[in-house]
Image (cartoon, rainbow, N blue to C red; front, side):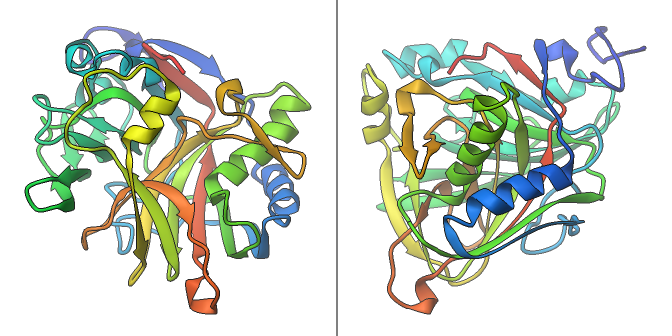
Length: 343
């Protein structure tokens, strides 16, 4: 047993115990998940190939991440939730913020963290989407290469800013992050193109298939984290406005607060995030027998050419050039660590 920087006992197997509680996940083999997704996703894509492959070096373009791979003690960290936004966000901000640097510094492992949350003033430079991308080397070295995507009302559009300061790693309201030791190794590779029904995005489809196979039929919780690269075609994103409303009283109220924008991809776009196969009755709907879910588990994108935000899905098109080509790399999480967690 080792001691973290704050004096709390932790182990190499359970390095994030200091942040809160832990829940052990069901961990099927990668080939088993491959087979489940290959069968289920074939209903949604005319071109589909899912296999086990070596994770590409993620520090290289177009990924430009802080860690090389997705392997080594893969886990999820979940903080906060939608209720933290409810009623008056202006009042809640002071009690709904978590310092990711402190979370990582409280562990005993080297940790590569990616995922999606929210940034808020005065703890961060902007109100917007926090796309976490950082590498922690025990006991004290940290590289922050995260992004904030935010609405810039002064210029009339959204902006993407890179955040390098290790002191600016504060997530507000809610966040879902995939953490590993950043090692290279074999992961699940998903390649898909020519979507049959563009009402549902690829992440929601994967989540729904894993929900039906593992949770509904076997009562097992399964979680994935990773990256999704999108090429050509047109995609939709949503952006949180710069100013918070005075009150948010419902899920519908929260959803309509966000602004949608559509964009044609002129170069590769990368999104990071997590997905968990747990259904949420508030958002439940079915398609072809699958419990399609719209939940907190989303992928948020970033780029050096301005595009970014919460990935919503593909936009209908009529030519081959409008078809988005997806290539994703995912790993299974073994545990989920949570603090102040609420759906």
